[in-house]
Length: 144
Image (tube, rainbow, N blue to C red; front, side):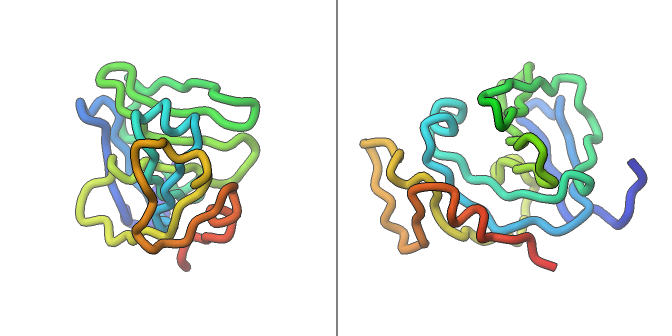
């Protein structure tokens, strides 16, 4: 894929087997508390997203994909186990786990989705908006 603009963000997994650049805007971070995200990450997920065509994989030899549902697959590093991407089928965006981005990100947290599925060992009390479904994530658009 040709580079359209200078990278607006870069990131990688723990072992650097998967490295990427983003060449476009990132949406604010959304925290997902759904059971699938909690089971793949060990806690809730903090994710941003970009247009699919704005994501450039610089190194992906250890990138593996797991089809977690009929509507999405999850990208992870087969070497270090890091969760990196959530890729919804047939959509023009891809979610990026915010913790894999290099600092500074310039991102802010927007809110919580699937809050009703949150683990019973923590409370969501940070004052950010909450949704029991997709609502908030679908309302958040990438800037620009």
